[in-house]
Amino acid sequence: MAETLIGGLTLTKATRSGGPEPFELLPHSRKLIANLLGWKRPDGRRLYRKAFASMGRKQAKTQTVAALVVAEFFLSQEKKQEIYMAAKDRDQASICFDAVADMIRASEDLLPLVTITESRKLIRHNESGSIIRALSSDGAGKHGYNPSLVVFDELHAWGIAEQELYDALTTGSKSRRNPLWVTITTAGSNQESICYREYQYAKRVASGEIQDESYFPLIYEVPIDADWTDQSLWPLALPTLGVLHDIRDYEEEFRQALARPEKQNTFRRLYLNQWTSATTTWIPLRDWDQCMDEFPDLAGVPCWGGLDLAAVRDLTAFALCWPYQGKVYYRAWAYLPSKMLAEKTATDGVPYVQWAQGGHIETIPGNTVDWRYVVAHIEKLAEQYNIQAIAYDRYGARDTAQQLQDAGISVVEFGQGYVSMSPAAKRFEQLVHERQLVHDGSPVLRWNIECCEIASDPAGNIKPVHPDRHRETTRNDLVIACVMATGISTSAKPKERSVYEDMVPVTLGW
Image (cartoon, rainbow, N blue to C red; front, side):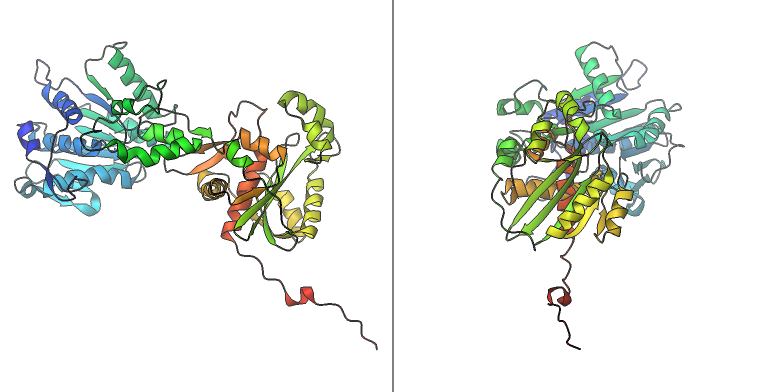
C-alpha cells in the first residue's frame, strides 16, 4: 500500500520541468523508504527505529522524507500519531513541512482527510486526530511530546542550544509501540556536535563494528582521504548525479574552490559530504603578494582604523585603510615590549628583533605593553593622517578607547563574533581577490596573513581566526585590525571638514 500511495504523489516544487510532476522514487530514496517501511519484526513492529541518512546537497532529501511522512501519516496503525519535522530554526523546519503539505494539497484523495493550518505549521487528520507539525528549537517547548515519527532536518546545524529539544524528541516515545526517528543531513564542521556523534555511530553500525539491528545507516560520501578534485568520485556523495543533476551543475562552485582555498572546505562539506574543519587557509600568500604597490600621498585622504589590543605581553595591532580612487590602501603597525623581542623571537620562530630594527614593529619600553604608548603613537598618526574613526573590540579596549576619545579621536565598538566580523571579512577578501587592495609589503602583516585561517558558521558567516588556538606561535592580530578598519570604512561616510579649518589667521591692526 505504501508504494501505491507514494507512487501517486505529486511534486509541485523543485521539479525538472518547473511544473507539477509525479513523484519518482529514485534508487537512494527507494532504499531509505523501503527499508524503513518494509522490514518488520516477528511481532509486526518495524525493524528499524532509527535512521541516519546523509548525502550532499540537492539530492532530493526533503522530497524523500516528505513522501515517507505522508505514507506513515495515512497508512500507519499507530493511534493519535504525533509526527514532527524538527530543525534548528523555524525557516528550516518549515521546508520539510511545506513539502509534506504541498504533496497532500496536490492529492484529490488525501486533501479532504486533513485540515492544514499554515500559520501554525500544523496538519491534523480530521478523523483520527493525528498531527504533523514543524518544530524548531527557537519556538518549541522542550517537553510534553509523545512522538510517533520525528524527522531531524539538517542535524549538522544543531548545537548545544538544541540539545534539550533533541533529548525530548528522542526520549519521549515510551508509550509508542512503533516509533521512528529519521535524520537527514549533510556533513558539518563541528566535531563536538550532536550530528557528528550520530554520524560516528552510524559509520560504526555500517561497518559492522557495532551490532544494532534497529538502526539503519545510509551515508553517501567521498572518503575524507580521497582526492576531492577527482570528479569520478563525486557520485559517491551525490547519488542523483546523472539522474537529476549533471556534473556541470557543480562546475562554478568547484572552480571557486580550486581558486580560493577558503572555499574548499565548504565545497567538500556541502557537495562531497565530508566532515571538515570549520577553518581553512584564508588569503593565499601569492594573492597577497600581488597586492603590494606604491602608495600615493594620503595625508589628507579620509581613513579609518582598527585597533586590536592583545594581552600585556603579546602583539598589539593598529591598522588604517584609505579608500581612494578605486583602491583601498592598508598600513598596519605592530607593538611589542622591547624586553620581549629576543624571547619571542626564540619562542615564535619569527624575526621580531630584525623586524623591529627595520622599523616594522613599534617597540615599547619594558616587558609589558603600556597602552599609553599605543595611544600616544595613534595620536601622532592622527596628526599626520585624516582619521575618521577607529574600531575597537568592546571587550578588550574600553579604557584605551576612552583615552583616544579624550584625545579627540572618534572610536567605534566592533564585535568579534560572526555577525559583526563577516561583512567586513568578506569585503576584505573581495578586495584581495579583485586586486583592489594595496599594502606596503610589511613583513609582519604578511606573516599574519600566512597564519590566518577563516572559520564559518552554519549561516555562512565568516571570521578570521588563529590556525590553532592551542599554539601561541601564530598571530593574526594585524589582520583582525585590518578587517575592523574595513568594517567601519564601508559603513561610514567621511566627516565633512569645517570651512574654518582651511582659513588663514589674520592679525588685526588695532
